[in-house]
Length: 325
Ligand SMILES: Cc1cc2nc3c(=O)[nH]c(=O)nc-3n(C[C@H](O)[C@H](O)[C@H](O)COP(=O)(O)O)c2cc1C
Image (cartoon, rainbow, N blue to C red):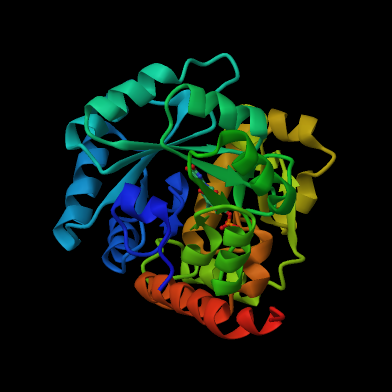
């Protein structure tokens, strides 16, 4: 099986991590990924301190393996972050700081609590800034990915980040969904992969079954980058758009963002209801272009072992035959 130095650093068996998906995270999914030897993650972004503790406790009931707790720095809740530090997770997973935000104190506090620090960056300068502040691992995230992403595609971004921050290990994110993706990421210089969309279509994912099925049904060509969900939510992200499924809701407001701002309150209420009802045309579904590579809804642990096995097979059986003596 493939093992890279980041496996030792993070105390995991396979170099495969779950993205901390604030809006689509569950203790069962976190624990399932960690139990299978990957690095589970818990999206803590929208959680109160009580919810942070409850969810971490629930995940720990299911596994004693390490997992990460994820915070979006640009509007981090200090009380929830302080609670997470008390829980001393193996990894504190950060992303999306404001340009003027100071990172070092968050990273130092995490280190003092015994956590390793990962930081997700969609640009080389962001990765360099995080390493300077003491990050142990950089997640280089390309714009193919689901959710909030930057402007660079994974293929050029990952080796650029590897060159800029080495020897600090890099995990590749954005567009990876199978063993082929893991091998490609390793070839680009990364030490592993971090996935979001693939795990959304898993048994333990908290998404409504209709949304999981929409990922399976996608051919990967039906995503787009948009600011519409953030405008509706009244959130200003530092330099990000959301990659999500193009649906009736997005088409209704595209080019009419000014009107969306005017009707924000009623629109957000309708969005929440659509999400709960599993209405895939009226509820936003963040997903990456790799949705086109996802054809089933297996247990999250099986996704980890399947990717590890497929990558191992490619390295042992397919690639060596391409080398001339
Ligand atoms: C629904 C959804 C929510 C996400 N929320 C977060 C988040 O709260 N914090 C974070 O660091 N990344 C978040 N991400 C990004 C993932 O961590 C990861 O970078 C991305 O999903 C990788 O691309 P992929 O979807 O092609 O695997 C989210 C992604 C999705 C699809």
